[in-house]
Image 1 (cartoon, one colour):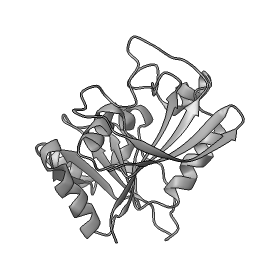
Image 2 (cartoon, one colour):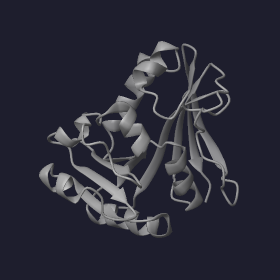
Image 3 (spheres, rainbow, N blue to C red):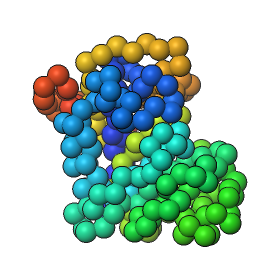
Length: 212
């Protein structure tokens, strides 16, 4: 069985994922970026996933991972990319029954990881395909990519994304510090094939297959 990586993101009409980098889900809901329909959509994706990849800022904003059992009765593993570690006060370190993996270019917070049963894998963008191979070897083959922009860029740049499931939200943000859906710097365009679109209220749920 091959690995399938699905990028799941909510974006504004101008391609932003928030007003600022550390924006929480509650902040987004406060100005109607997302709503319960989108939250239930994300929950449905988690119920069919073995693992979730996200960036450090996304975790810093939420403080912890979602805890949603998948169709195998297990909580998806959470893989967090960071270059400088994570705040020791985050609820993430105290979570139980969730496999947590911190991925960094060098070992980080070894004592804290060991005390919290958090794994620390050392990978860089250059050997990202090897990381995916390792996840596959450990049976983590249905993978959600939650971003943010820097993480999304790495996976698109390495041609590792198979599908994109985008919730298009009816607002324009255009903030000076607004993070992009994909950070600038791709060396070539990524082309996608439209699979489906579903209108629910003012949200549009779009599914694309990445052309390879």
